[in-house]
Amino acid sequence: MGRPIKKTKMANTSSGVAGNIAVTSYRPFGGSNNTSTTAYIISQRSSKLFKLSLEDSSEAVYQLKAVAPGSLANDNASSYGEFCVQVILNDSTVAYVERFYNNTVHYVTAAGAAGTCTYTLGTEGTDEGQAGSGAGSIDVITAQ
Image (tube, rainbow, N blue to C red; front, side):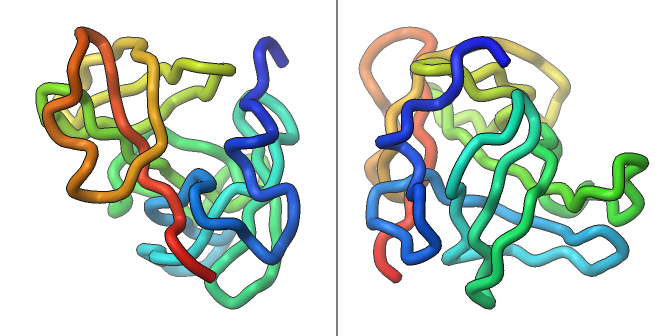
């Protein structure tokens, strides 16, 4: 699996803790797209599979996809639902996480440009104009 995400960046429980990685949008297998405000990552199962706590307080394993929320498919060949996590790069470019590493993410922009950057966890409004080249910010859940 490589370098998994630090457990301190994930909730590790279904109750959630402010400051954990938030899910931008998710789509259950065979279901409709849900732009989330309270879904978050509980744990990492593999490099692309994560256990999520969803808005209805249920838990399920979903596959990470580096696409905009409207492009999540509901017919994944592996029968997992799909989810995306948005990252805001230091130049205010919106990108989507393709793969999480311990302190970095591999991302893909809407234009198809790919890259790697270190990331911090922050809330909307604090993620713009970060110092340093190759930095990005991922939104976090704020309350449960």
